[in-house]
Image 1: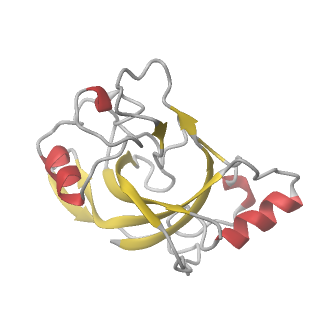
Image 2: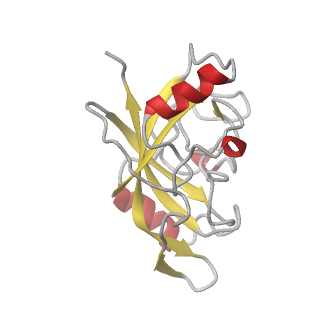
Length: 182
């Protein structure tokens, strides 16, 4: 798994439309349910994985733009080094956007929450997670954060075509870690 970066998010408790007693909150990389801290792309402070190299970058962006980060959850993400191409039915390489510097500072302490599957049809920023956005968590065993328990489980579900009718791919597997402030 490759360190990809950080993102502050406004975590949503399980929405009523997601019928699963297991789920307590949505930790997906996708901003469809648990939204990102702001519309950050136009600020061009993100790295080649379309995340942030350190929390400091987001905190400076928030301070400069009057964005309150209180109540937000800080996440750190690692990405599987290959993405699933639905058209060819195979794993393929991908790289961070070369024009955006990527120097991810590793966290001192991160709590692994699980694995997300996220669509990247535009090959840059994360789009949708079939687990939450397409209600696949109602058919697949997920944890209390609407995430999968392992990289192997994510790969198996992708390869079996479980998400084939959800969102246009390619799909990337992302490990989601929560950063607990000291």
